[in-house]
Length: 444
Ligand SMILES: Cc1cc2nc3c(=O)[nH]c(=O)nc-3n(C[C@H](O)[C@H](O)[C@H](O)COP(=O)(O)O)c2cc1C
Ligand code: SF4
Ligand code: SF4
Image (tube, rainbow, N blue to C red):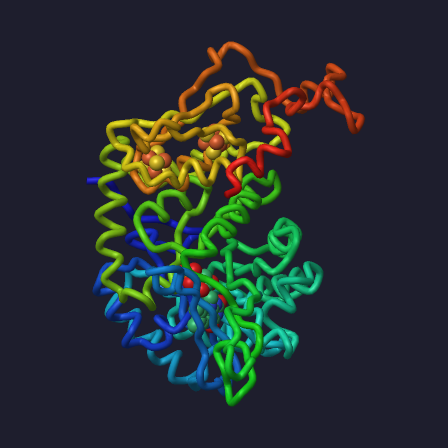
């Protein structure tokens, strides 16, 4: 049986599954229930001067038959008195001394930071998370993402915190920035023990077509919210990778957040360097019970691969994430259709003909609806295999013999990069495209 326990910047937890600071961690009742269900840690709903929230607060992207593929909120930090939260943190720690309780904090002045840090330490919190991410409401008051978007300000506040903190400090970053390394580096320079990301992405989830107000509508008006859930996972993974690969950040533990829902998401985040994962939307959607599938799946994965601890595979994908200029331009794949699986829907033909490279043809004699790949036209873009509704029906076959290797970077050094508008060295020179008139040949 693999050991799932972690030591995250000095915060110990029985497993890497943590609840993110959000409604599921709003009270001791919820955090206790979550720990009992199997979660290893919880980042408490952000504490500070309690707020007044609006009603309603949430919106969602329902994609086809998938509810909440993306989730959006305009909720602020806790609206409960600090003393109630502190008492409940102490209570939870009595019942679950070996689980991680991290207090998320957001206040304004140095004095407030110092006071609230002492308060949560006295309550028994195992760590602190600095919320520099909230992209609505709190940023208008100079907190949340307003701090996360200003690396110098962020660094100063981290320094204030580190002057006094006796327990590990995690700095939570906003994704609402063009270069995540800037705030990441500022936090490390300020002395943070760890980083976490992402907080929500500034967004408008939709517009009511009768009232013309953005969702969620508050008495006829709305505002931008923060986007999260499965839709944001790729953005979170890219940002985690950026930090985990950076030479001055790579030794700082990272807690990965954003769209985590299944054991597979957890493994992917760890492969990109995360030392724990945090979950909000999936717990709000399906409840705390999802952790059981995460745990079983992670154990199965580790058993299959022969890993004993999560540190055996943490960051293992990072050496394979490179820059485009280092990819092998000689690698060649071509689509291949498994005729025994094909249901003749022709979605691949439509996608390739209209959206790719006209490399799929349909039998003209009406004998079959199974399309055929025109190998010499196929650029191996993958589109047909992505649209095909049948699993493993279209696969990409390697056509180069694996012996040749040249990258854009190497081509530059050899003077082989195209440099003029009509350069013979360009990749598409002489590649098949139909004639312009062919577009109209099926006109009735
Ligand atoms: C309704 C709601 C309230 C949230 N409140 C907080 C908060 O108080 N503090 C915080 O740091 N993040 C807050 N978040 C952000 C989450 O902690 C998390 O960073 C984000 O939702 C991405 O994770 P997910 O895709 O698993 O939801 C909130 C998110 C939601 C949906
Ligand atoms: S891989 Fe791209 S170019 Fe090749 S057949 Fe499929 S869609 Fe067309
Ligand atoms: S999309 Fe897949 S199932 Fe449909 S015709 Fe193409 S290969 Fe067959």
